Image (tube, rainbow, N blue to C red):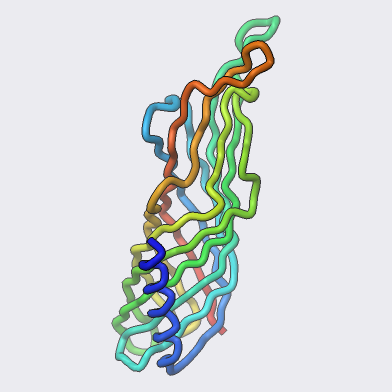
Length: 215
């Protein structure tokens, strides 16, 4: 993994050195996240829409149709789980929310086809590096389970996009994680001692739809 990251970073610096034009912009969009587990956690787990926003840059390379883009995005994803709590009036439905807040740095290589001065269609692929900036440990089900996020994660993007009038860009991509995003740990307290009786690794895949404006 370290060798792969080194190769990606070296390639990005090499491409930057050959860049013909550097353009700055702002990017924002929605995350349609799907959190999957390596074993059943419950049928009442529901994913919620999130968002991402931040600065972006685009590098035009000396090869026709080839560009590189990179962004530094604040990324918010969440999901809820519904269960029931026993009270003096019977079982009452309750809902807990877990969140993932991170800085995501996607670096994409793009190949585009121009449609005159009006539009440019392109496909892109590249690695994405994420760093958690929110709560790493989140209790759910009244401390019967705990959601723990990794401090960093690595994923890849595959997508399509269009640039309109050289300034407005719209993209859609699939974000595929490598390795787990986090885990849920199930526990109970017996005689004042916490006892862990199960864990489930989780991955957060996401469809992302974004819009950007380049100055």
